[in-house]
Length: 275
Image 1: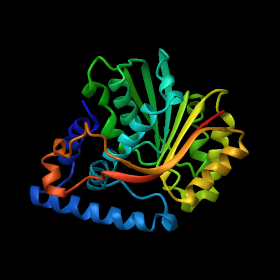
Image 2 (image 1 turned 180 degrees about the vertical axis):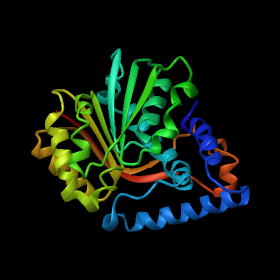
Image 3 (image 1 turned 90 degrees about the vertical axis):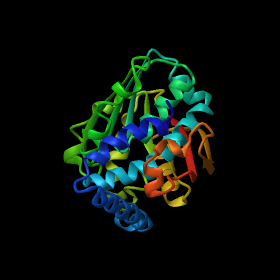
Image 4 (image 1 turned 135 degrees about the horizontal axis):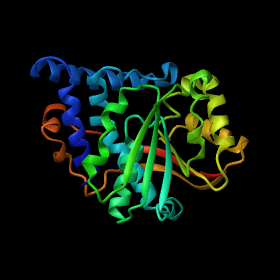
């Protein structure tokens, strides 16, 4: 099962959760797709978009999660350092800002493609608790061959009173920051204390995968935090990544016909750093 096929099953459930008649649902999703594009254009000024409405979550998963999950897969598949993590019997992964599912879906696809079956536990950490509904039964969808579980924790990285009560995730083997630094860039002065606490508390040898838009503002912010906290850059790069050939947008039907193309390529920057 590729990412598009798995995401299709999630979209079916998410679509049913959108209130209204069939035409009203289609209209609300179309409006959400347009508003997301507009909101992302001003993200560096506003930060932390609102995904409380079911139509907004559906729109994000359809348009962006499909692409971002495959970026994670491609980077792990091409990295000897990251792929070696999944040779262990048990792997604990903290997906910071991972509510939309991009992080663990990319990891899932890699493990299935590489025929690896570690016991993977993904801690999904996100401000919006509604994302937990989308992925609570993903282990049932992928079947028994893949031992993957997800645990959702809701907290705001800009609020120490919230995130300071969830420090167990600091003990992960791998941390992922997938398009999250750009999400909170506008609030970076408030988020700095969380990222410093996270990076300074990582276990020796733990890895972190950073992926975001190829924009010096986000990359420089991450690089500065990593350097301050003594993280070593093992791999880095930037450029345009396109959808793998095994993914077929027609697997997203009937939503592909209704709502157009999902995101198929992205200009990204990435880092693999280690404590």
